[in-house]
Amino acid sequence: MASDTETVPLEEVLQALERVWEQKLKFGPADELRRRVPAGELAERLVRTAIEGIENSHPLRQPIQALAEAIIEEARAMDLLGETKPALKHARAIEEAITTIEFLVAHPALWEEFQWRWPSFRNIFHARLLIARKKVIDHPDVVKWIEANQHKLRQFYRFKRKIVDERDQWMKIQDWLYPTRIKDIYEAAGKLERYELTSYALNSHLVHVSPTGDYVFGVSPGERVTFMSVFGSPENMLVEFGRALEPVTARLDELRRATLAIALHQLLYRMGREQPERLLRLSREPTSGIAGIVDELLRDDFDPVRLETLVLGRRRPHVEAKT
Image 1 (cartoon, helix red, strand yellow):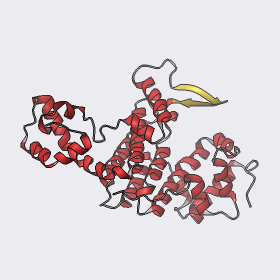
Image 2 (tube, rainbow, N blue to C red; image 1 turned 90 degrees about the vertical axis):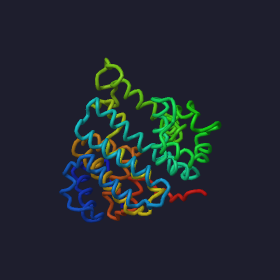
Image 3 (cartoon, rainbow, N blue to C red; image 1 turned 60 degrees about the horizontal axis):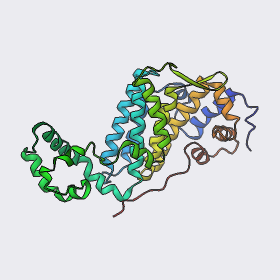
Image 4 (spheres, one colour; image 1 turned 120 degrees about the vertical axis):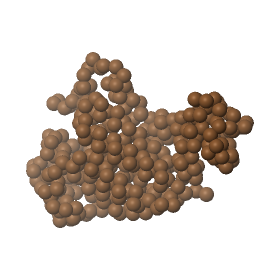
């Protein structure tokens, strides 16, 4: 039987979460919920679980691992900077890495191409650097690599003339995903509005001094939204990271469990301790999503699968490379 969240005190909700954490989900002692875990540590744990679930032979293994390691570095930087203006750059970098992963996973027909592009960019950048500095590609290792990869270069980078001398084409190549720009990646992931919103927030503080200061607008009485809150917490972004990798992991149960722990611990429980009024308000708004989660925590017939779905959404189906 569901409970009436309209009348449930906040402390009872948090105690229910502690019981579920320790007794139902067996995540560990309830005392762990009271410890604030640095985002860098959380990222390292989740990345370890996520990468272990991707087969070594998977076409996206190398680029996803590199993007995941970058997320750890950026999260550690945010731990040091806190909610400051310089932290915005690191928040945006985490978001870009996750969105790039979503873009890669969503295009299995291109996985073979991505698999070739990733390690090949070292030689491509070397060739670009030689042209920029010496106007000619004359390094023997680079010339040898170009000769061995002419077919791929023509296929993926659209070279038409003699590849070694096609200077203009080399100079166009800015990154390993060429010709895809970060704006294109956001748009393909259905996040174009998000790209524009966070770009504005980033530029408002990093390009010029905003006369509005850190606080931009109010949502409800007593609640103000900062530029940092537009990006969201690193913990929120880590939950997105776990969700993004579901279609390519061979250990979906482990990945979902690790992601659920972050969501319950760092987001729901922390909100209850640090923003109690907000949690109570959201728990009483049927459309917020929090209301259903709180209701499930208080149910006599609690179902861990139901809770997982309420927090993380439905499981994303496994995707195979298209040949």
